[in-house]
Length: 378
Image (cartoon, rainbow, N blue to C red; front, top):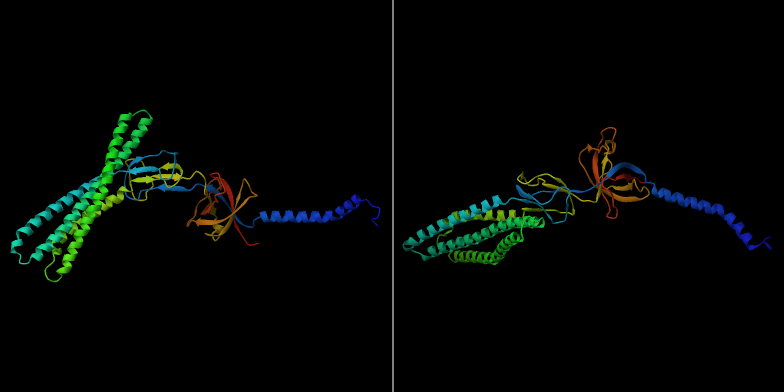
């Protein structure tokens, strides 16, 4: 039948016969692709949102200085604000005065003990009191050194502030190089003194520990044979422990005077100004990341049982509706909030806020709209 028919003709005939099948297969492929892009489920609208961070103190105090301005960009670890240190200096001065008073009373008791020593029948009693006195003398000496270092650290903090201001003034030609060198010299001298105090304090702490050990060894040898000096020394111990706690509290506060940025971002709001008193956790400055890291949506009352934490959702960008981002609900609020007017321009609406983290590969614009779809089984 095909003998004598050219090959090209036979090929065209076969292609015409296969064409309907090829068209059908192509249509199926397109349908599968479109179906894959189509997502079934409940849809709400969300907005790309910057993550905000409040810079707050962990100790109460007064704002001494703000180091940033509104809209300024900041880096992680950059100092945002500083708290005033005047109250800490007063606390240290009080603690040092109290330690001197306790030292004087301890010396007076020592003289009384020594004058009565001739009337004691057992030298072990005098030895017990001597060991107890040595413990408290060593502890006072150790704490006085720590208090002095804390005082120098506060002074250093103030010099750092002044040096920063002097550098800024020099950049604006309002301060001379001589003034900057003078401030830097003072700062370096205090810093070197603090560095040298470290080994001294360590030796005094060792001296105190050794005095405690000697007293404990003595009590162990004479246990039950003679009355202990603890009863006489206890009032001094309690008085010293109170001042030790105050000094440790100041040392803790010193490390919390500088409030630093946790992120690379910009200042979106200044809430407290220098001179204002702030409580623990009360925000002074609010920061935002410049690139949105999450999408915030609002679940309407009719769907309150949907969009739980961990539920799978799909994000669909309005600008690129063909690109689907599969993720999950990261967090959910516990009360109804007003939906932004942009999403409900005709009348007020309320919903439970949910937050969905954007993948690092997605670069959204602040305020960009996304469809949030809770997928359902097909």
